[in-house]
Image (cartoon, rainbow, N blue to C red; front, side, top):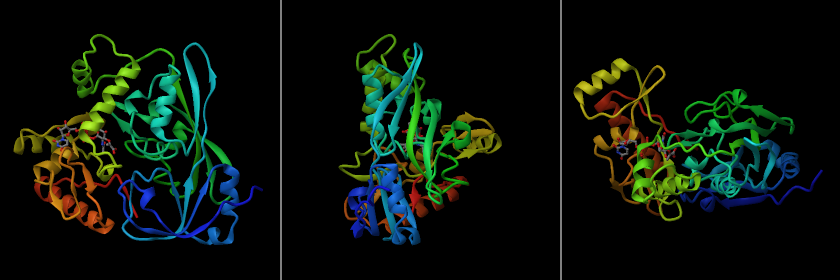
Length: 342
Ligand code: EPU
């Protein structure tokens, strides 16, 4: 067995969460391979501790110190594993940055994830919540993933159906929560460009960029980056974890009732009902741009909670609960956090 990587005590997690919260992990280690992970899991101190597998820390809200072991996934590697005239399978180690994988595919003239450009976080975290943006979701190009079972150390593969993907959901957030560590991800990308510009703002941004006709995947990627930069705060400047809440789904009857009371309410049909943008609901309750000391609601996207510097996680959680209560009171709709609150 490989020697176990260094196990550190009382480590600040501030550099490892995009909210920039200064909490401590009782134990902390990084692993760069499956063998190193197995060696860590064999240590009695690690065996007995609660475990948190950390990727980019871009979907986490720490409300207190973590009284367990944080294992940071740093498994690298980006490669084309096979290809034919139509498509290619691209494999990435779970510790690679997601945006790095997007760039790698574009550099190799492979298409399919350009709409997911600039999403913070690592490759390994992407399938956990089936990341999605601008009309695309991870599951659209997903082939399979490799994951290590914490209880046994065995690595197995999961197909798309075994992952149980839904809207910001997978089996790894449900039935198999905390049981597996994703170690690698394999996507099937297309050789032929199939630009997806269904999301309105992509069209208008491409027009603003002076691009007429069919855009290249690189141009779609640039348009997406432009939109993200204009709406979403850069975690390197202002702490945040992207959308804090999921967009709620309501029944058609509930939506008709809302439309009657609030004629401006936006909604997108989904199987079984209508998805309502949480950002709109939150903005209507007057939260957009509100600030409570060091934390608040982003002024360009009400779905994003921010740490202006020095905020505490429990304060941000309290703000989130207040937002949930006011949306419930005004609209009778229950918002659910998208971010993992610890
Ligand atoms: N809106 C407002 N006020 C706001 C924000 C949004 O009225 O402050 C309304 C507008 O009607 C707007 C609509 O909400 O047209 C949709 O807004 P936007 O396009 O910004 O998307 P979103 O639904 O708020 C979702 C994802 C984002 C993803 C974007 C683009 C979720 C929880 N969030 O946000 O994902 O980038 O669509 O596809 O589904 C993330 O998950 O962290 C994330 C950023």
